[in-house]
Every structure is written in C-alpha cells, then in structure tokens.
Image 1: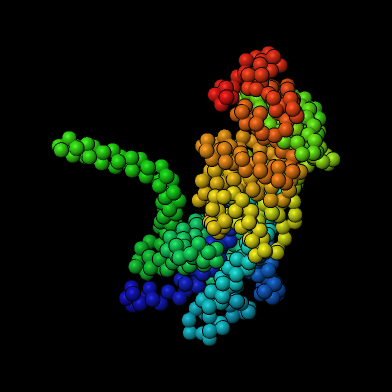
Image 2: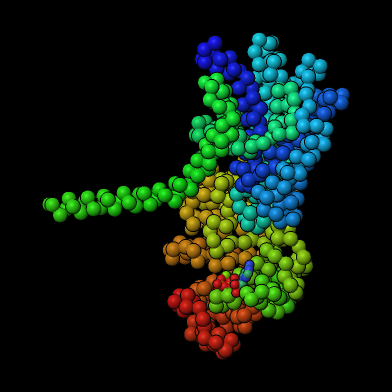
Length: 319
Length: 265
Ligand SMILES: Nc1ncnc2c1ncn2[C@@H]1O[C@H](COP(=O)(O)OP(=O)(O)OP(=O)(O)O)[C@@H](O)[C@H]1O
Ligand SMILES: [Mg+2]
C-alpha cells in the first residue's frame, strides 16, 4: 500500500477524531479566549468525562444519560478550580494544575483501573471508529460529530448573546469595569470554568465511545492539543469573519486540521512519539507571535528607519 | 445622599510600608452636590473614592449612600448606586466588546442579568441618541470594538455609560488627567452637562485648581487622609488659586507639595 492510499484511508478517522477534539477546543476557547484564564483543569476533566460516561454505560445507564453525567462531572471539575481560584485566591494556572492532579486519583477511582474497554458491539453508542465509512449516513461517526459540533456552537452563540452571557464576556475583557457595572466577576469566573469543563468532559465522553475505551492518561497534554486547534483554526479560518459562531467553527476545524496533519505524519513514517514535542513547539511559537510583534517588530522598524534616514542623508549629501 | 463617617483605611499594615491612607475621614454630601476634590499626591483622594465604591473593606467607620449602609456591601453590589469614571481610560470599558454592547452592560447595571437578549433593538435606538450627545461620531460606529477608540473617546463613552442609568452618586477620579488638553476640556464640559442635566450628585477629583474652582458647587481639600478645607456656595465661587494655596499651607502646616497642582494654575 502506498503512503498516499494509507493517508487517504485514514482520513475519515482523522476527521472524526479531529471534530471530537474540536469540541474540546471549543470548551477551551471559553476559558482561554473569553474568560482570559489559562485553565489546565482540562487535562483531567476530559478524562473524567470519559470515565463517567464509560462506567455509566457499563453499569446499565442509557447513553444519553451517560453523556449528561459526563457533562455534569466536568462542571464539577470546573467548580473545583473555580473555588481554588476565586474563593481561595490561588492563581488560575496553579488552581487548574491542582485540580488536574487531584483528578488523576479521582479518575482512577471512577474507572477502577487504568483503563476500561467499552465494547461497541455490546452497547448502543453514539459514535464508534468502526462507523467512519461504509455505514448508513445516520450511523456515520463524522456526520454525527459534525452535527454535535454545530449544535454546541448554536447553543453557545445564543448563550453568549444573552445578558448573562455578555456579562461573562465583560468579565473576561475587563474585571474592573465589570464590577463597576455591577457584575459578580467571581461568580462569573466560576461559572465560565464550569461551562468550559462541562464541554471538555462531554468531548471526553464522545472520544471514549469513539475509540471504545477510557484510560487514565488520555488527557495528558490535552490543553496543548486544544490550544493548537484554536491557533490553527484561527490562523486558517478565523479571518473569514469576526462573527463569534465563525470563530467557534474555526476552532473546531482547527482540531480537524490538527488530526489530519497528525495522520499524515504517522503515514509517512515519522516517529509519532515526537508529535507532542512538535505540537508543544508549534503552540509555543504561535503564542509568542503577539509578543514578538509588539517587542521586536518596533525595534526592527526603528532600525529600518534609521537605515533609510542614513540612505536619504547620503543621497542628500550627494545632491 | 452620601455620609462618610470616621472612615479609616491603612495599607500594608505591619510592614515598613504601612500607610494610613484615610485617617478618620468625615464627609456628608447633600442631594445634588457637585463636589470637586483637591489635595497633594497621596492625600487619599483616590482611596476615598475607592472606599465609597467598595474596592476593598475599610478598617473602621461607615459609609451610607442615600440612607443605605453600604459599609459591608461588595463592590459589584454597590455598583447599582454608583457611576464611576477612572483616571485610566482603559479601565472603564471592555475593549473586546462593541460600543453598543458596552452600553448595554451599563444599561443593566443594578438589574438581574438573565437569559434574555444582551441587547435589544429598542435599546440600540436609545444608545444612538445618547452617543449623538457626545458629538464624536460614535453613533455611526456602534458595532466597532471599543479597543479601537482613542483614550478621549473611551473616556467620553465611560462617562456616558456611568450616567445611562441614573446613579445616586457619580465618582470621577482625575478622569481627564490622561487626556490631551483639548480632549480633557471637552470631556470636562461633557461631565458638567451630564451632571446638570440629570441633576446628579457627583464627586470629581482633579489636580487642576482652576477646574476645581470653576466646576461644581462645593470644593473640599484633602491632606493626610482627612478633609482640611470645605467650602461651598458663594464663598467657593469667589475663591482664587492663591487663596487655596494659602489655605493649604495654613491648614496642613506644610507647603503645597504637588508641583502638578501649581503647574496647572
Ligand atoms: N492599594 C494600595 N495598596 C497600598 N497602598 C496604597 C493603595 N492605594 C493607595 N495607597 C497609598 O495610600 C496613600 C493615598 O493614596 P491615594 O491614591 O488615595 O492618593 P491620591 O490622593 O489619590 O493621590 P494622587 O494625587 O497621587 O492620585 C498613598 O500613600 C498610596 O501609596
Ligand atoms: Mg489618585
């Protein structure tokens, strides 16, 4: 099999997985872009969602109920970080790390062991990696996750347009102004963290169904993957429109691009172990862009100007 | 309208940097008072305004706004009584949100924020009319992000927002200090207009003695966390800068320390 056919064959799977991570990235978008906090809880809460979903299904609960359970468990993760941050005054990054660490134990307890298999032929699941091609449309994992992404975007678009949603955006934009306008910024920060982690855990639940298992390490580096999706999506599709729905869609598509690249790297035989290193570097470079622009670019411009002045001076002298 | 009773506030207690910023401050404002506040650097002017707004807890004393004791009320809860404009033009508006969205946030000050739309069609018309008053052309840029505006434009917008829902008390902390002289004059004129049109009770901190004399019906001078001079009515109108400086030297026993104030004669 040539490299090209193997890439083409793995493409549907990459798209489905990318969309699931796109949901995760949308959750992260809420904290990172709207609330303006870097929330590291997600590395743990994505696994919490997966664990809760898998265990609920194994124990006989219906799949929709298991998804709801996952969402709520994620909100509780966000609540923990929110309390650490607002009530106990711990910096957001540290608060997230603490929750993430605590969740490692919690997730192990929920799963009972390091990983749990969820047999797709035994249970009625929403998506499965067996269903990325050659199945009727209504079972197609890509279509179903795509519809989920659109539904989540629609709900968030509505929510952030409400009076309460606007007050969340204001909280992320300017804490002082928000309080002066009577907004409970602490409560909003906590709720934003809850909503974001609820969505992240939901994506974890979908991911567990898709891959057919949940394992305690599945969230490692999730924040970097999510950030990569936000950054890639913003760079490729974000310029289309400033519209909030478009920005969210761009984020989800960023996840898809990320996973397609991931597949290509695997197919051409590059060491997949290096992928996390690569994504960390790519994210680091993109995160540095605003700083580089504001710090180095003016200096560069100044230098350029000086050069030009010299040139002009020389030219004038000659005249 | 406002009663400040024996308020004390110290910062960095127990360290070498301990600073008593408010030291038994007393002040009562009547309905409709427009008070200008002057005093040297570190006199406690901003601290007084922050104490009223509830930025942190005070150590002693009480603050009553229109009969309601707000001493233990959190900042965001008190906000329903207050309009605030800060010295830093970036501080009073949300840069990432549209002009009209910022106004909608201010329009809901003191009201529950539920799941109804964050901004309605009817409101937009109201905001347009209000923005026209500024005469800055902002009424045609209602969907622009506030971050794109200049400092003066942002300060004018903040001022408009602070009075969109009539506050019981308007707090202006050197709100023209960061602007160029022409813009500063314009924002000041606008402040005057809004205060008189809506009959607001207001406090305005300024380093410009001329402005302090020219505006408002009352003037207070602060020194070391207390009010050392309080004048209103006809007496205030007749005040001159030289008298003020002399008054300061008399009352405080020191030279007027603020070179900024002297410069702005
Ligand atoms: N948050 C704070 N933490 C520590 N010290 C503070 C704080 N706020 C004010 N101070 C101190 O309290 C004193 C009074 O400060 P304040 O800002 O009220 O002065 P001001 O009269 O507004 O002066 P200026 O004209 O310089 O604005 C100063 O010595 C200041 O250093
Ligand atoms: Mg001050």
